[in-house]
Image (cartoon, rainbow, N blue to C red; front, side):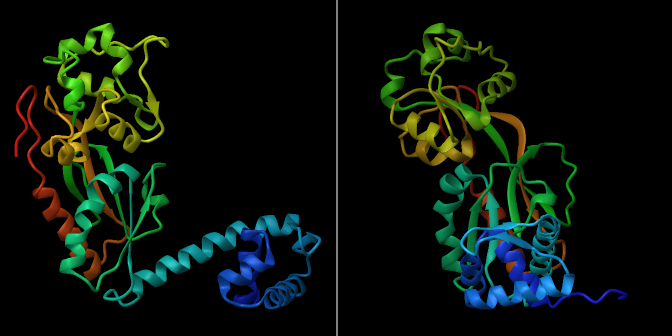
Length: 313
């Protein structure tokens, strides 16, 4: 290399301080003293011949040079961490799994005890993501997402988990008070105020209507039912009798089979598949074990009741 790089420790100290905004926070993250962070930053400034921080020690601000350097270093250190995870002993360390928040709460967590019982030596760390799951956004080992059912999977990194099926669900108590016996009933303006909506999936009713061949008119602002921030809130509102939700079978099947919800119109395929995507295609035994377990859990899902059919057990 024609240009001598600064010491890695100095770059790491600066990146943490610049990203976190305080020397003390960087010291806590790197398990060193604030004085050590300050010395490393000064060493880097002397090496580069430019100032990286302005302002007081209590409220440091980044210089223009620091604004250029920090994001590049943050990305570089993240890439290094990912590469180390790939080549490290695949029998050790936790698995980082990212998926939609409601999927995590309603499907994955209730089944995770089974994996832990079978494989107590493999730790699974869950994090939620509702802001896109493209390969460029992946920083963990595995992502579970929903995509249009094209069937064009990269089988070295992806596997189809199960198709999504949508259907209207409501509490047994509410079902006794509203007439919901066929899909045409949902065109009744009187039901518009009890149709529940979710901000992160405002097209759910329209998607179900298109898949079921039903007309679900858009409510006027004065008729529209409640809208919730996340699907989990919407489903909980349905369980509590606050309205009718259109929901994926895999998120409500436990509630339907337990009698907390009813699905008088059954469920229809939405045209989306749930997909497991690995960050790497290489052999990783821990990841192979978890993916195989996921596939077995998906195969054990009860079959969703068809349109206007009774729930299956």
